[in-house]
Every structure is written in structure tokens, then in C-alpha cells.
Length: 156
Image 1: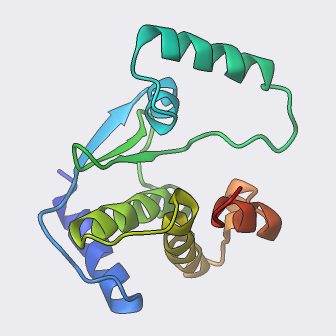
Image 2: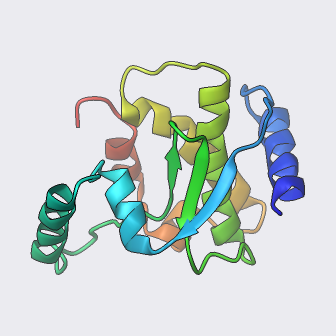
């Protein structure tokens, strides 16, 4: 269903960044946002999920608190997007582009010092994608330069 879109994104990433195209393509799964949060934080058991929900409730009023928008499931080679994802805006497509970077990182057996280092290229690719439409990470996702630095640096 998404193979033509994923192929085009893969070729665009490969043409614009030092990240070789590699196939097969990932699976795409649309799920409730809560499931994305569980996957993002590795909450697989009922008790882990309850604990995460409690933490989420305690920090729900914290300003500039970021939610997991999507996740790449390395084990199953699946891009997990929110169930209401349509891909009809530059911002929504940029989320798919970001997660596609993670798929290409896995398929090309790339290793990183830490998870933040792995995110650095994904955010660069996403930012370039958004710039094609006159948008950026700050306007679409409230990701300012400081937040980006913290999110892509080891040790934070």
C-alpha cells in the first residue's frame, strides 16, 4: 500500500545524504498514540505500561513536553505511525521520512555511539524535507535548536 511512497522517500534520502538505499522496505503499522509511547519507552508488560501511564499523567502539564510521534521498531522492521496518520501534509510525511532514516540505518548495519547520535541524521533529513515546503522542525514540531542538540547528543 505504501511501497511507491517508501521507495520514493528511500531514493530521495539516498540521493541527498550519505545513506545508501537498501531494500526490502519496512512495514508500516498505524496504531493508537498510546501504543507508540509504549514502544518508544520499551513498556511491553502491563506493569511497565501502567507505570509509564502514571509518569505521563504526572508530567502532562509540563511546558514543552514532547510526545513520541512515531517510532521505528528495529526488531520487526516496522515504522509505527499514529492511527490518524494520512501523510497529506509536509509535516506528516516528514515523520515517515525520519523513521525511514532509521530503517536505512538498520538495513545498512550502521552503529552509533548512543541513541541520540542515531537521531542526529534522522532530524537533519527531516529538516531538509520540511525545508522543501518552507517549513522546519521548530514550526511543525516545536523542536528548537537547544532541544535538537539535547536530543541528538550522547550523555543527555
